[in-house]
Each structure stands twice: as structure tokens, then as C-alpha cells.
Amino acid sequence: MKTAIIILAAGKGTRMNSKRQKILHEVGGKPMVRHLYEAAVGASAETPIFVIGPGETGVQETLGDKGIYVIQQERLGTGHATMMAESQLKGKVDQVVVTYADMPLLQADTIRTLIDKQRRSKAAIVMMSVMGEPESTFGRIVRSPWGNVTEICEVAEAKQRDNVTELLAIRELNAGVYCFDADFLWSNIHDLPLRKARSGHEYYLTDMVEFAVKQKRLVDAIVTEDADECLGAGTRAELVAVEHAFRKRAVRKAHDAGVTIIDPEQTYIDQGITIGRDTVIWPGTYLLGDTTIGEDCVIGPNTIVRSSVIGDRCKVVQSVLEYVMLPDDMEVAPFTHVLPQEETTWEPT
Image (cartoon, rainbow, N blue to C red; front, side, top):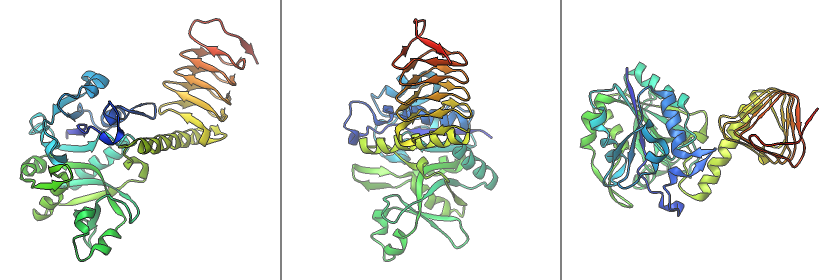
């Protein structure tokens, strides 16, 4: 079966108060949209499709020919944005995943879980959900007594119902990642109603759930084990929260690999960094770019390592290493700035 992934990337992100689209801002060492690209190619062999706004060239400039780009001339909601990819996909794939470009913590494994679940169950829709708190503004996942999803109830809609207290008490929330049966999606998406929204009127992709239920098709939801995957970054403050989540993820990965992080709150590790067992990372250390550190090293405090390879049993304290290879058993003298092909003060241990 073939699976296409549509990444909705047309939002301007006006709350970011930036000259750039929000999805081009860096978190975890790279632009948000690149994280989504990497998750997409890790989950499907098909080239991901990016739905972009008119006149927006930042995504193409960032990813080049790695994606397929379709333009949403009018910003009329998630349902309308998904329609823009129909001509690229209808009759060509069996499953369609739709997600947002401002969810940089979403992982390929999670997308694959949705794909596998839809493939096995033949559901019309399998979506990702997350457990949250009653004050959340996310739509509520309403399930039947048998466990299948019957509705996504938005907060504004819940407040207009008699059972508002019961609805808002639901802790399972819609995370905004969907895997559709492709035939079901394209057969129904043009029937979406135009709903009133803050910015005018929009077609909501969530209304596809109602179509599936009326057609007696299965709708299911899988609760993500990592709630951080659902974090979006629409403001500067949210960008900071996402960056913190990336740091926590990197620290967990390092701990699992047998690395000691003395103070995780004062350590910055980009995604994809490789650190060997029994290496100790001291506070004030920044491990950036495409960096690999060997075993039994001591890095920091107050050290920056950018896109470098450090061998085993090395010691780097209060120094900066950029784009270099450090042999095994080497010690970099404090306050040294090591650059490619530069004479440096390396002292054997």
C-alpha cells in the first residue's frame, strides 16, 4: 500500500510577529518544517506534499526538490488546504496522512503507528490524540461505549450544549494528525460545510469524522505516549516551550545511551547528536549541528561543539570546537577556539 503525507504549511503565523513564516523558525537545531519533513520521509517512501500560501517561498527555499508543493490561494481552513493536494494524490495512493508544519516534535514512529493501524483496521480515519487537562482549548475526542470515536467536539461547540460540563471534562484531546483511507477522503472532502471561523469562514477537516460515522465507517484514535509531540509553536513563548521539549528529548536519549548529563537545565543538545557511553557533559555545554562524541569523554563546562567529531577519552573544557575532528585521547586547553586546519594547542592527556 502507498501512503502520502500532506503537511499543511500555509499559515503565516502572525502571532509570532516576524518577517518569516513561523514554520521557518528554528527549534531543536533546524527549522520547524524540516523536522516535519524528516518525520514524513521516515514514515513513508512517498515524497511529502506541502500545502503553502501564495507568494510564500520559504519552504521551497528550505527543502528544495525534496517536497511537492501545492498552493492554497485562499486560506479557507484545514479541509480546504487538504483539497489542494487532491490532484496530486487521487487514485495514486491508498492512505493519506494530514498533519501540520508547526508540530516539530511529531515523530516518524508515531506516524507509522497511525498508518499501520489504519491499514489493519480499514478504518475511514485513524487520528492521534493526547491526554490533556480540562482547561485545554483542543477539541474533545468523544467515544462510544465500544471505544470507537463518534465525534470531535470543539470547545466553542461544547459550550452550546446542555452537557457542556461532561464534554469539557473529557481529557482525550484531538492532536491534529490524521490517517485517512484515501478513497473515503476524496469521496467526501468536497461535501465539507463552510463554517464560521474567527478569520471568516473555513472548511474544517475534523468534520470528516461526522461523515464517517454517518456512513457507519470506523473512526479510531491512538493516544500518543509523548504529549510533547502535540506541542505547536505559534508564538515566541510557545517556541521556547518547544525548544525545552526538544532538549528534554535529547537528554533522555543521552541518558538511555549511558551518558551523564550533570545539569540538563543548563545543557543544550541538538537532535541527532551521537554521544558515546560513559561520557560526562557538564553545564553550559552546547552540542550543535552534526556532532559525534566518543566514549569516556569529558565535555564542558562552558563549551560549544558545532558539527564536529570527537574521539574517545577526550577532554574539552571551556572551549569552542567548530567543524573539526579530534583524535582519541586528546585534551583541548581551556579557552581554545578550534577551527578547521588551524594551529591549536592540543595537549595529550
